[in-house]
Image (cartoon, one colour):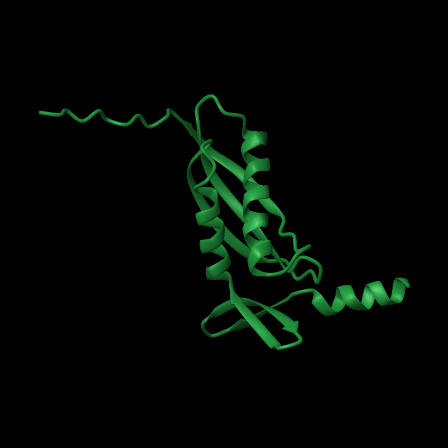
Length: 132
């Protein structure tokens, strides 16, 4: 039983590769190979972070790890809004990014997210528009 689970797991894991156009993940499926460039993963993570109100600005870097189970790592450099918790923002970022990537890559896929808080800023207030 353990061999079957292990074979199934190894069959569906992703591996990293590099071409002239950039680095990408390679996944073997029943329909062939699927290549997902790191720039696409970076854009998905950036879009996912827009849902979190605690994060005012974020820089996203995607790096290979060389690990078969998790072939990439996402590093975030954040500007948090004053008054919000950094650990909660980190947990929310991890959840939102991995949920977005699971839709793209596969269920059960997890990418470690490393968070560094660069700065804490005051909330941006919307300017009131004068109606004439």
